[in-house]
Image (cartoon, rainbow, N blue to C red):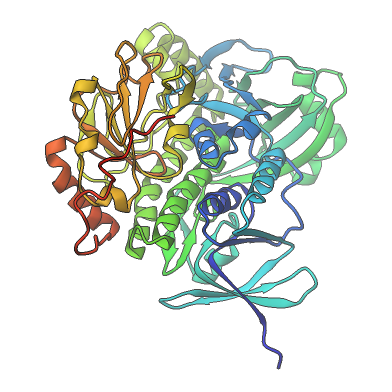
Length: 550
């Protein structure tokens, strides 16, 4: 019997949707040998997800694809709520904040997005994409995962990987082979989804018709595309509503008798579920394989991108020896609660978008009008502050410190900063792909250069000192010095002597005073399983090095 051809890789990713392709780009950009497979011959051709948020765009920035993605989105759109197709607008959500560097809500087309991610993967020789390849089986031990994969021509090969990440969707083959069940809400709803192009409607905000007779969502997209989502009744059969005559009648309240170019029509059954566990040995679940989110909050795909960034940087750090494999257990610890919080948000928004009776629809409309009369409540909804922010209280986070409006375990803001030559840049473009130590304050309070624990060199943490908008930037040994260009950082972060340890996914690992450096470093070293080799110098930086500059 002929032995199977064998391939070796550090990470095998199963499923080349948004989650898998994002993960592969994160790994590839760090030089981690990666193979991503998908049984389909290419990325998707039909529209699926339609909303990408500011956190996901920040992840695109981390892999150097933010501008390519932004070229194909409707940026910064909001939501207008109506009583019926011919009714009045009773509420608006129009977020204008760019706390993380990008608009909070953006419409996109998944085929273009996936194609951008796939093309981006070609930048990295360490990352290979195998389309038309299907996972047949896999086994694992405490050293590796061995997967059997069927190729396009029907032959099979064997892939030996350090880790396997299942990004293979809600019907995940990997999850089923692991015997992992989906648990959670009993919610289930059927919606007719109709995607169109050559759209002639100039309105660029999402319309939600909270009509108990037929809830409808109308979402604008880039390049004159649009999506209609219509809730189906229990007695309506799929084949009936998908018929051309029925579709024409269902869209008539929104399109009138104007011709409509339909590129896709399908019936979805939306669920709210979470996998009972996300890690089994060296195998991880991510994206829809780990959680199924109703679409009302537009967070299903975005939750998958968060999974990819959270797990991705940890796999990079483990494969490069910066962290112990035990640190990977923090992935589920950190991501599960927030994924479920967004599922609950979607369910709650579903009550607003799809009221079960005319009475409930009237109560919702009245409540929104009342809220509009109270500025703090109005702004709470207008700026989408109801969306749960990820905050890790367990995992790879030390302490519970506050620094202005931010605290440990939260995503750090991304201000626009000014370099010495006057050029303005976003914070993450200065940080790069790794850890960072950040201090914000007057130059006389700078203490970054005095930090001497060898952990910072182990993590290759970049040192960044940010001065207020009206302060004079001075050179600081071993640090990049920038100015808070428009004062936006000062609005959320208090200046002073405190230092922020920022993880590669832009979450705050610790906030500490200079005198707490040793305790903080030792605690975080323990969390990540990092062992500083005996005899490491207290400060391995070259004391004669010149200040970093941009």
